[in-house]
Length: 95
Image (tube, rainbow, N blue to C red):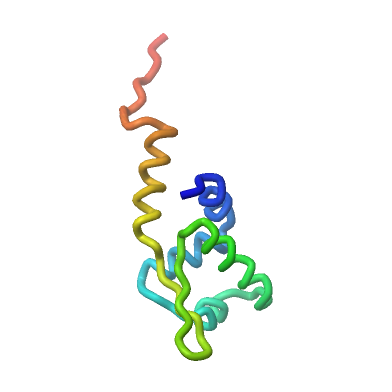
């Protein structure tokens, strides 16, 4: 997993919303795009960034592309965040 691509993908609110929507189940590109007020090329750009980060997978079914979450990568994200921020609760500094 490429950590930089993952954080880049998560940095955008539109991409986070796409991920949230996919957390309820697989959706076609058209169904996802219908929820946003942006152009088709912009949606394709978001899908590409999410795919490059391995956060989603797309499968062509006829003329449609069905996207789903790559849940394994989300487990990797949690591990990365724990590595960055530590697993121990922070102790308050007393003066």
